[in-house]
Amino acid sequence: MLKKRFAFAPWCATILLLASCGGDSKQGAPSASSVGKTYNWKLVTSWAPKFPVLGEGAEKFAQWVDSASGGRLKIKVYGAGELVPGLEVFNAVSAGTAEMGHSAAYYWSGKVPAAPLFASFPFGLNAQQFNAWYYGGGGKELWEEAYAPHGVVPFLCGNTGVQMGGWFNKEIKSLDDLKGLKMRIPGWGGKVIAKAGGSAVTLAATEIYTSLERGVIDATEWIGPYHDYKLGLHKVAKYYYYPGWHEPGSALELIVNKKAFESLPSDLQEIIRTAAARANIWILSEFEAQNNVYLQKLVSEEKVQLREFPKDVLMELKRLAKEVAEEETAKDPLAKKAYESVLAFKKNILAWNKMSEDAIRPYLE
Ligand code: CA
Image 1: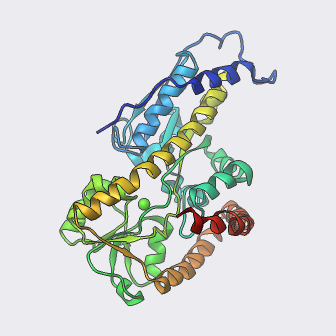
Image 2: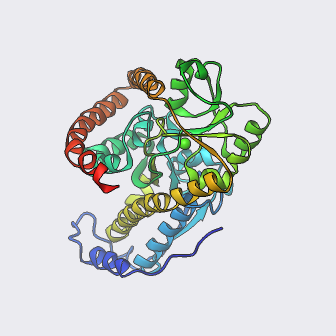
């Protein structure tokens, strides 16, 4: 069920103010013909229609752009399959079938080898670190470079936070328990499971429940307590594992057709940037605010068995994840460059985290 919590915040007035007073360069200033023009755009998503948090976030983004632009940029949001299938979002935006999309970059790794680095990869960055890399560490520019050949402009637009490790029908007490394990886990995480002796399956969200129920798979990951509860995964698997080593913070993207974006007057471009940044923090905050509420429901009402992966299992998965990342990024110069950028940034931020986040953490209890 959707909560209608959107209200016209004073914040929007600030966007309007910033947008209209911003120092437009001559090149980007609205032309006489574009001022007062109304644009009607389509935004396709990889989420089921009205999907909590992710679909809601896309709807809010569209409302914020409408309010801030005084109705000059109207965006209609489509759920997966309503206009194009969920995994066709990038192609649709690249081709201009839709001007915009909301999705996650790792879905396009077949087309853009660097893509997982702009969403999440095993033992990669958490949400706060990703934001810092994107806004202040060169991530934004690398992401733009990766999508430029496809005529697509990316904007960071949400994060799930640290995900859960997933649902298992047997306990994982040692590395041996991963051997022969059939798990629904996409992307580089799936390649790590395969290296550990299991087999990885990619299934759409709609197929996960029945596949687990019928024993087609032994385990699955999805997102976190809020969404996993809604999918009902506690009814078909006994053990719920943490942490989500494979997705320590999955970034989401707003993608815009480059030609369409460049055709907008600069104030509308700025409104898109600002609304994407607002949706970025709204989506992460919503996950963070809801996850423990649903985790407690799962544990106390549904009697879910919560388990932490053993440390030696995580350390071995981490070793294998490094191999996977190196193999995958060796295939493409830009993927290699982006991976090196992430590693250098991570070294830097982890050194600071030791004296900041990590040092204060025990005292926040
Ligand atoms: Ca996931």
